[in-house]
Image 1 (cartoon, rainbow, N blue to C red):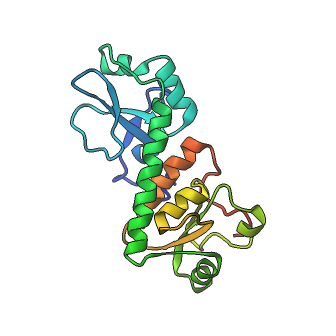
Image 2: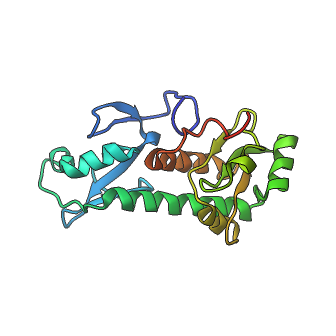
Length: 206
């Protein structure tokens, strides 16, 4: 299974990471392009023109790519790399994830709060359980990963709160359909970058 939570198949293209040398599904990688000014730019939406350069969504891989300027080798030209590129990528993906969860909420496919989330889990309506990384372990352990679904703990309570228009949120759940698959993709990438659990099990029970 890929990091995005789907079974790998022929429609799941692969790319080689310039830092690890490994070939893997591109959903677990970050795409970069070289701008007209020779600056390395993250292409988080994978829509910018130019030849893509791929790095695993992993802090060690990104740091290695920056420290050794592996982008120049991959691009076959001298390029400029922001030393804080790993941090910029993490912030960018976190922002994308927050926005996607917000759009999912506005479409009626997401709820927040312990009781509402527990209700969705019990009814089988939830496909994704989101829990704040800085929330109480005791409280988070009372909920469980949706059957056949995913759990992620890569956002802070304040970040998750932004998605739901609140100061902070500890528990959130998303129904299947809509933008939920995109949420899974970005959450898996952010999980890798922030070094949290792999997004397959909840803190407490399954």
